Image 1 (cartoon, one colour):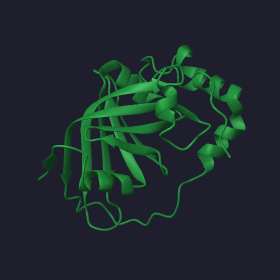
Image 2 (cartoon, helix red, strand yellow):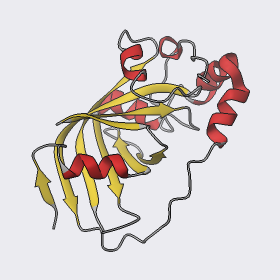
Image 3 (cartoon, rainbow, N blue to C red):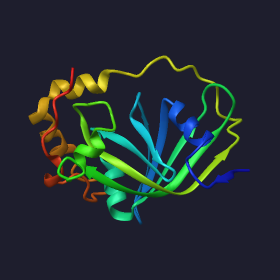
Image 4 (cartoon, rainbow, N blue to C red):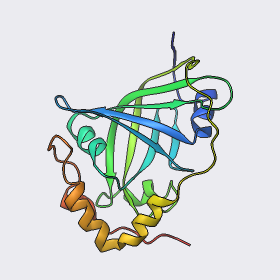
Amino acid sequence: MSTEHASLDGFIGDFIARQPMFFVATADVDGLVNLSPKGGEGMLRVIDAHTLAYLDLTGSTAETIAHVRATRRITVMWCAFEGPPMIVRVHGTARIVTRADPEWEHWAAQFPPKVGARSVVVVTAQRISDSCGMAVPLLTYESDRQQLDGWARGKGEAGLRDYWERKNATSLDGKPAFTVADRGVPPTEAG
């Protein structure tokens, strides 16, 4: 049985902040449903009682971007892999903030600088719930993987723009995702 919560405040927000991994589910009105694992230190922030945001890194596809642009629907889920069992789900709507948006600098500043950052997904919670999670296995967190950051640095700015054009322009169903106007110029990684 799940329990609904009025906001992301309190123990729900604290639980979310402690999790090194989360899952994002989206779908267009027809076609494939997408479920993506996400993670990394500082890659997701609880902004206020009904808003969270995460930094979207360059990936093999752009399903979340395409689906959010088509329907705005999204579900984000966290599982406790360590400690007491618990699952938290946020069902809501989302919007995509890209480098071309006037809000980009504000939103990108909420996260660690990443060469491969292509957007920020801002989620407005409509339903917040937790459930037991007693069937979720216990796993030990070791560290964040560094391969994606290295890959993005190796591509460089021009290589990332080319990759976005070739691999992230449409979803697997051919729906528009990452447009020419969205691409902008990737920032250089700080430090």
